[in-house]
Length: 177
Image (cartoon, rainbow, N blue to C red; front, side):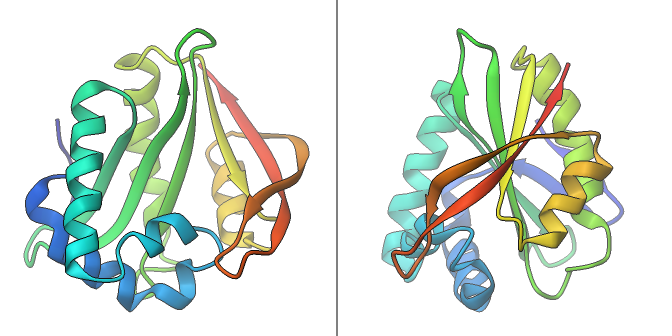
């Protein structure tokens, strides 16, 4: 399964993506340290990235979690990630998490990429609820949630640990099938 959009490709993580993912995460480390601390810590060098990608590819194949890369079609450079995670199959619910590199920020691309993934998640995974959990200071992410028709539900107290160990409240948005 693969989605193509204006010179970009969204596809499942593959083992051959390890070096590209390491490059992407380290180039954007300052940008991702607060909102993607776990992914960043697991991709700080090529060896860690290889282990990370192997595990994420396994999880994709077993349906535990779905990690997609967003690549430029011409150079195959990773410019973003989209997760469908925290799957609760009995409740038919999952969480979307996403990031894009600093060079692509503010162009509306993340919204357009998610617009491809959301119908797939509802149809292929048969989810009824998708969630986005973002910090209130992450204006780009909260704006994306609203543009895509997600509704604010609640503030989740002390729901996320940042790279430096601080624990912060997060905002919960949901969209229903």
